[in-house]
Length: 84
Image (cartoon, rainbow, N blue to C red; front, top):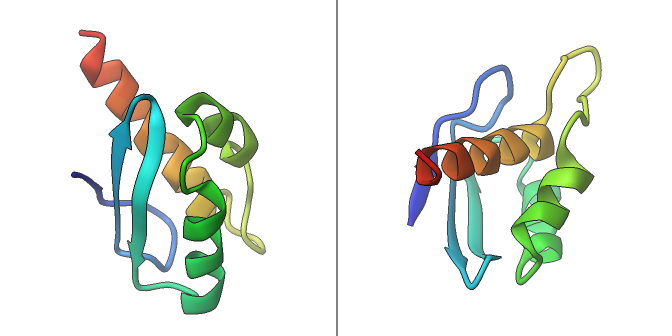
């Protein structure tokens, strides 16, 4: 299980697992409950690179980031850490 503490959004934490380069068990703590449950269900089983590409750069209102964007940042951080 990987835990990421996002910045600049309502959610306080993002948890997920990666198995065979696919996202599993994605959950958000805090934030817009229904939307985040929807995002979690939509990305379940998706390839990490695909989720990253689809979510990176999404904004929320006037905020420069969003829950999907922070998920992309978490995935990017994990890949960078793994490749060091």
